Image (cartoon, rainbow, N blue to C red):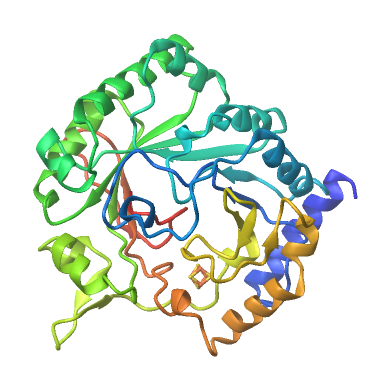
Length: 357
Ligand code: SF4
C-alpha cells in the first residue's frame, strides 16, 4: 500500500472511530510504546520497578530487536507517528536508546522519552542526545532540594539532575536551539506539595520549555493502594486523582471515560518483546503475543487483542486495570509555562505512561 493511501485509510478509520464506529481496528498503531529497559537506578515506592514488585527480570531491548518491530510498524507506512521510549524502567540505562531514537528520526517518526535525569553526565553525552533527533524529553524532578526529592525518589541526586539539565540545555543552545523539547515534570505528593511554585520558578530559571504538574498514580485496587495513598497523597486532594469516600477509603475521582481510544491507537511492547494492551497492564496479565517471535500484524489484529477490545468496548467483565483506569477523568497532568507569575492550565485527563517514577 502506498504511503498516501495508508494515510488516507488511517484518517478515514480515525474519523469512523470518532463517529462512533468503535469496533474498527486501524491497520497499524499510530503510537508504539516501547520499553527500552525495565531496570532503574532509583527506588521510587509507588513504581513497581522501584518497589521491586515488577514480575519481569531486568532486561534491555537490543537495537536489532527494536528495528524488527519498527520495520513492521512502518509497513504499510502512514500509520505510525510516534515511538514512546519508556514504560517501567529508566530508558537511559539502555545502551541502544539513542540509536533507537536515531533510527526513528531517520524514518520521520517522532520520539518521546522520560527520564529521572541522572544520565546527562558530560557535554559529550548532552551533545549526542541533542544530535540524536529526539523530539521530546521529560525530566522528572519532584523537589526543590535534596531532602525533598530524596524522600520519594530514593537514590536520586538533586544536584546531578539540575547540573545535567543545565548541560543538556547548554548543548541544545550550542546546536542552535535544535534538539528535544524539554519538559520538567513534578509529581505532586504530600511531602512536596508546597514546592510547586518554587519548582516552576526553577524550571523557568533553567530554561526548560514546559513545566508539568502530574498527580501521583498509585495502582488502584492493588494490595498496597490504601497504605500508599495515605503516605503519598497531598493534603490538597484537588492536586490528586483520588478522593476520600465516606468510609475513609481513597478512590479515583471523576467520571470514567466512555470507550478506550488507547487500545486502538497504541501498542505497548515491553523489553522482553511481550505486547500488552496498555501501560497500566503492570503485571503483563494480558500478553497479546511476543514481537520477537510473532509478527506485529498477527498480534495487533489477532483474536486475543480483538477479544480484549470487544470486552472493553462492551464495558462488561472489565479487567481490574480498566475498572481503575484514570485516563479521561481530567485528573492526570497540568501543563504550564515554566517560570514565575504565569498560571498553569487545567488538569488534563491523558498521559503517555503512568509509572510514578
Ligand atoms: S486501563 Fe484504561 S487505557 Fe488501559 S486498556 Fe483499560 S480502559 Fe484502556
